[in-house]
Length: 254
Image (cartoon, rainbow, N blue to C red; front, side, top):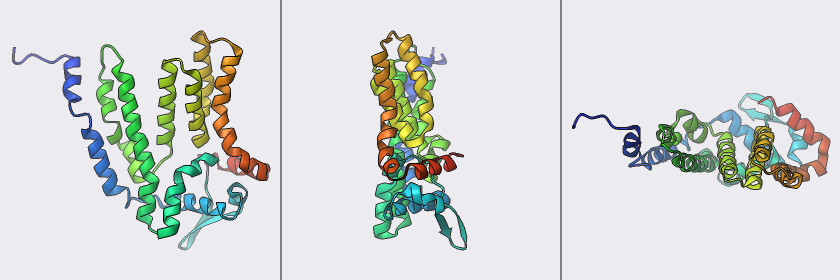
């Protein structure tokens, strides 16, 4: 019958014939907007913090530093653990060489956009295993053009996109009971943005319930979860532990 309705599965198959279309649209938006969309407050804070690396321990110097923008100034705002500096390093280096705001914005946001694309691909892979396939598969296909994701990757730039990918990767590994890999993914996420570490107890409970009840195995997972943060903090702790903790504590209102 020509007027018969399609089943949910048929609608899903029809809607995913061109899975790259949203990615292409997002990429075009990125190329058009990323170099010219500037979050002045965060961009200046990021560059000011990395400038401090040239003078010594940035976590020691941050508390007494201010950011200047025209006639305005404010205390340096850096609420991130040390590993986050690696995400900004290429853009910061390019800015110091070229003094080009467009180059900084493009290089800063490029890894964020790449993480969003990778997140969409991983979401589609996870949901493809569901039977029957649900409408969530269609929603996942448009992840990269979600306005919130466009804001974080193309307009303002936000490290939460990277943390989101790593949390999803932890879920992917946990589904296949690769507990240490899942914990390590959470650990790297936490070394970038602290709050993913709150999910470590949840992961350990799932590991326990899945039948992995040897203390040693749970210990390896816990170690993997906290090792990235600890390892990335050691150089700064060794230089000035008190200053490091004061800076982190004073900035965790975000």
